[in-house]
Length: 88
View 1: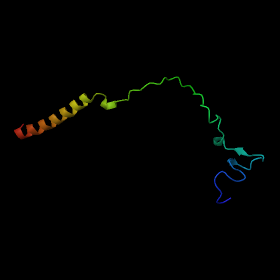
View 2 (view 1 turned 60 degrees about the horizontal axis):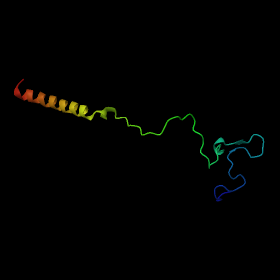
View 3 (view 1 turned 90 degrees about the vertical axis):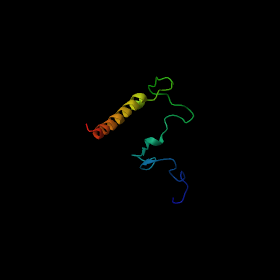
View 4 (view 1 turned 60 degrees about the vertical axis):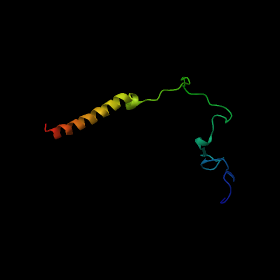
């Protein structure tokens, strides 16, 4: 049925292989909803309580240490050129 709106026709709402009602017809498992849409499905193994998790800071966990390392590297770089100019 070309041009017909989606969900109309002889096999509206069925997807699968074969023709419905014939041997070998397999209903698409994704089209079967095991839980009615009005109900909330039970949680599977979830025992966690609702809480605000602290984000992982990674390398930025201690920004003062990171800033100190960058400043120290900059000073060492400048000291190298200052020593070269001074003749060391």
